[in-house]
Length: 501
Image (tube, rainbow, N blue to C red; front, side, top):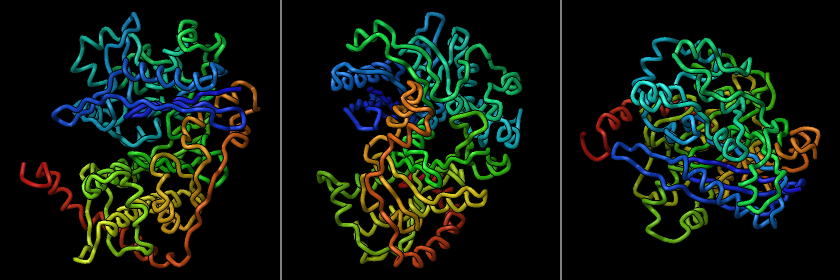
């Protein structure tokens, strides 16, 4: 059997087909055209997302000779697309990093509290979630809002375009900031409180639900049979965890533009912990089962920035820098944030800080120091999770950053745990294929499918020689954020690093 996973990301869409043993049969990728406004807002187009999704799906099915049994999609969580009564797009996705809806968010914040949102939604209060963007649409674009009949989160939108049916998974719905994560229903209390329309939102279902079959016209366009099943996927981070194999004590580490560790926790984290540390507690495969997200939103972005500044236009800068990484740890300390920190600080004003540089430091020393800073940030998050008895004993790295051998070795040394990589590149697409295989009854459930379809290619173990050095460096890193907070605030207030606003 052939299962296609679609990973609908913030910069492009990937597709990969797998057989029931997890062997990859073909893949494809298309980038979106991202428009950047003068204020830094990044604009995506819903129609382009769908067009590129069809392209990768068509390319992959061509590679499988038109054989396809099921398709399933994951996506980044908070963005939504609004449709009118004829199912035409009337509002394109607003990204979580953009400032749309900040004013409306602060108005809504006065109606609730961080404890209430954490208790009901499993989230910290934040303008990045869907609520602020929906309130923006309601207040600032009333003409569009009045015509709106459906508000579909991206994964839901892709499903709707694939089979004509709408349903949203629990994890994606939780990113709205008005979903009751314990009951797995839209919160009537919060919908009333914020003046929302329940009729706009799809019914919530578990990941892996069989939703329908591929539209006949789309099946003909793609050259596949008419009985292709459409399976509900989910928010990309939990789906990555499924693709990583659901092994006990393991956590997936997604290393893309942002970086996220997603342990499966079983029970929901305490509301006061969620509110204070900013670590969301999301529904997982079944009602009452949870995972959590600890992240740095500028991880891969920081590496890209550094390489663009110091690679001197050479080809394959990642390979060049990786091959010249010094073998020993550095004494350079880095706070690894470009656009604010993620968890546990949730400090939007945090900026990159580097200390300990002298005349003898090379660009390759600096590269290693940045990778160390990113890994120290993960150790900080893991130490916070340990306070709630969430154990991370082994990481499975996925995404673009996992191609860097140097980064993985540094990660293993700083965290002092094994770090593995999968046999396939895309954990998200594989997670979707695993959900599809379970929905098609090839396996009894997603756990059995993951056991048979997710395979580790290599494991990097920590170097014990570096344990004590990094333990000392981590204790200093813990205090770094407080030491440079005023300087970061000064940089943000100045508007740019080079001159006053």
